[in-house]
Length: 387
Image (cartoon, rainbow, N blue to C red; front, top):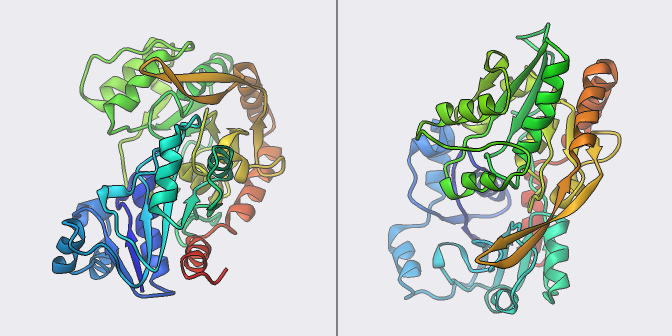
């Protein structure tokens, strides 16, 4: 038996990760799932909803764990970690026969108390990328390892990857929640250069961001004009694009949808553009896009390094340090990709469509090896001390 304290959802990374781990861990052990309340709309699929609901811990035991009357169980515990502070998710400090914390973060200048939180709360900290693992080791946490995220090969695969729509256009895809860290300002600027050179290019963006503070970080961009005048997402995004010279007649702005519905979007585009400045994980959108047999232009930094190579992607390698401050304190140093290299790679992709398809074919092969089942098996071996 494993107690799994994990987020849930269908259109953001942590939620997708949580639900897949519960599903796949159930193949190895009985799972007692502890998470926030959820309904069918949070899952997006009736069968998946009822399966996950069947794994929920009983209400009486859940209440006892929540109020602290149960502090320890005689089984392994896998618990999501809130952020770089290494505080247990949902404030639950449940001990077990073995306790593993699972984390993604992007602030790489950590305070000593964060590392102490890691020592106090877990037998081991599992990170979503080698980059995060290296950050923790550099700050003195030794009991740390990495388990990469996976993709669902039933949904994300190279089958029928040729475009159904816009066959006469070169379609650029950009995804991930709209914020400075994801580098969408660079994506806009690079696409603008391509748009001005070629009449047959289009942009499909899937940038929905439910966290206003995160979205507003784009105000710090040196590349684009960013002003919000509406609470309506599509209106806001179209204004940002229009203000920066993007022809809206050649743009499709996507509303949020379950990630299981994304392959059709991916497969109707020609290249994914991911000039991200930092990824604490391996970037689930990037992985799922590549798993569909589609080529990417992506920054070779942080968590992307666990996925990208010169055969399965066009890597942006020229970067400069970018300091990130909060309350006048530098909390992170990210890698800011070079705009000119990004534009150059995008132009190369436009001019070399046959070679681009070969890159996509290799991407599909490589990412087909990264499944949630393999991730869950790795987690199971760690928490049961059978590695």
